[in-house]
Length: 171
Image (cartoon, rainbow, N blue to C red; front, side, top):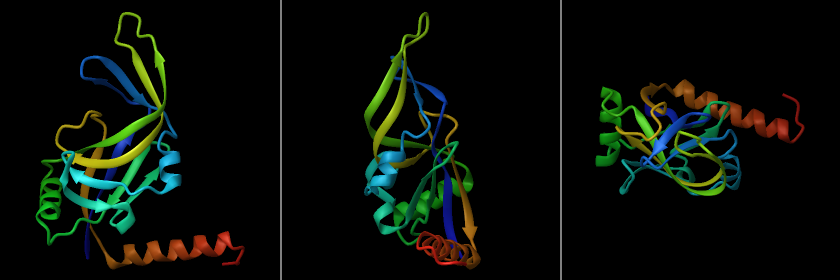
């Protein structure tokens, strides 16, 4: 049985205020190029680069953009202090949100009229996602579960079937 943390590190079309200066919203597809380029994205605790709990290139962090936002699945290491902290705080519900570190590659600004201006983020270079008790976007999520060995087997089966389909091999 493997311990997993999963949820949404970011949600599309959800507005938040950044530093009291402007409103921000993520456009659907803003993570697509980053994920296509397969960068080395890390998952950390509270934006602290000294507390790494997963990494895409180590296959301990999986990221997927879907219609709702940027979904993640993390396999934290329960033998490390940061892994124990991630498991414990998410399992208890003390940490339920996420944030992310990025560089904007494309954006659109909309005049807010009598409100703060709105930045619509269209394309980002993502370098980290983080588990946090204080997310900038309140509708992010992180939850704990124990995955059975059947979950891993189903993932392997899905990968094999996708590879066969891509090569034109009948199932």
